[in-house]
Image 1 (cartoon, rainbow, N blue to C red):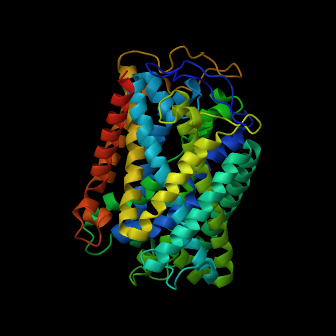
Image 2: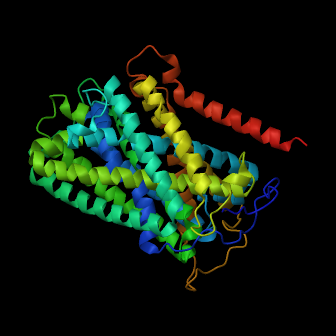
Length: 496
């Protein structure tokens, strides 16, 4: 049995000021931190994209990591203020709506939903990078496990679809089960990161001066803009602590701190992985590091036994990361549907009373994610273009939220209209104080610049094989299609 919050769309003209408590409030501080850290999923994304970053810019691509981390910390600081003032599910949508109005918030949430669905599919595909390297029996289709081959691409879809089916079930069971799986997974991931970092630095042979060089023929400093894709892709999702605010104990106190803590922990650990991977690589010039990435370094330096154990931990991180991404996407869908802002909103806003889980919203994220996986069968290059585009969509949504906050600051308006002055413990809400305006402005400049960088129609990113103009312009075409589809839906809703 499921229940729906309303019988008519409450957000036809405005966003509801508050909502009845339907989701079960059981998540503590570590669970909130785990939600953000597991979405970022350092092991998943670093193992998935290390080869891409190294191939684009060579050893010097590691320097893009602290730059992106600093920029994202500026964004996270702005989000922390908003999380304290607007502790609602579907945080990105809710924040934008409450600061700049329902139409602005709807388009922000729409871009975020599209990005989150594809992020789930892209994360699930990472199993193909890990499992066949762990055991050849995981290559169920064909013989070549490389994700760029026909057999590797097909096997990636099979493994990814099975994983999304599993995460959808977990998202439907119970919040306590979800929190337990997330917590155990994050604990295993943190332990795995620590072991891998120690092992990599213990086998470092490359001189540190190599980190100053870009790949030959890559274009020098310009190549670092492409190399930054690795860091940009990894460091998203820290807002998930805000997405789960309605399920978190003392969210005004907890969410701001766990947003920042999740990003800081992921930034530090991911940076050490990149650095250790380059320094421990057997060779920087034989082409294998750009083709196989960190799995090649682990198995060649640590031996098959220990290397496989650590790869198994990476596989766990991929599974938990995919689960966290789908959870965040489901809360976004649920939040927008609760306001009558999505087609089929009555079903999508339904919550199972016993479990407190928005099951249909989770299915609404998982089903299209599997559909996007099928694109990998037709063309792995097309899926790579789609994956790059989804990250650009998320950055655009982030920039829209930060931009709305900056406008309110410049107009002298509060970030949280009607929000209390203190959190659940009676302490003042998290605030940047006098640093709010400069941090907000810098965060917006960074967000816009990174969105442009991610969406720029580079053949090296979107059409490496050449000859497909639509792939090269894929990000901009997707943005245009998303905005056009959203505008058509909004106009249709306005008709009597």
